[in-house]
Image (cartoon, rainbow, N blue to C red; front, side, top):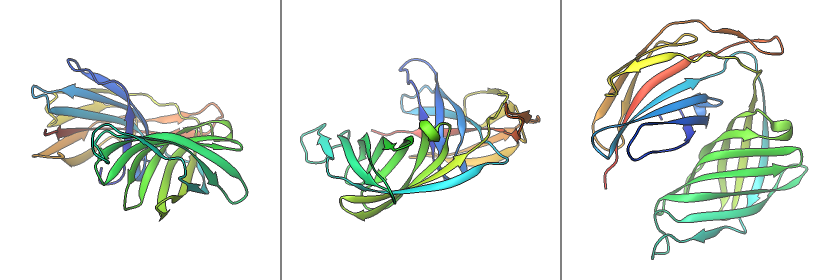
Length: 256
């Protein structure tokens, strides 16, 4: 998306609609949570994606952790006959070094664009806990991945991770961490004709926006999102926070 990335996980069914979880984001969407409704269209190559996003606002703390990875174990499991194939799988468990600690990260990537890009997910196993990320790795340029969760002292974290190329086998990872108070949110009801033209939502927070979204291959899709409601919420620790729901549609045409 123009202002960042949204990461979703969940099922896709050949013959019915489904709902996927939003587990993280970058840029404007750093720390986002919620769900995405996926609607099938008559064409097997067209879908409606309706993102219902809960963006925490209010007081939060931030911090960074910087490590350098030495990619010495990267192993590619080939999906075709060429040296580089769409669908190749890369797996790894590599050493990472921080300012005053040594650790490991492990995970996998799927080749999504030959010679250009992978889609990855991995976990950094740090002395005080773990941090998991998901997002793109580009062969020749830096990228940003979403922090999708953590354990230990990193339990409940949000944010994103900047990936910088240092050499062909060395990379800098800058984890930009957001810690937010517990948030109680009320999800809104929404109705739509599944054409992506108009969606009306009633939910929490200040929930009015207009958005224009362009399909990946053909056409331009414009969605209007209107709604109202309020969402002053008190967390378990007594702190106040608010959230809102953003709903819009994306039209995607996938060509063979």
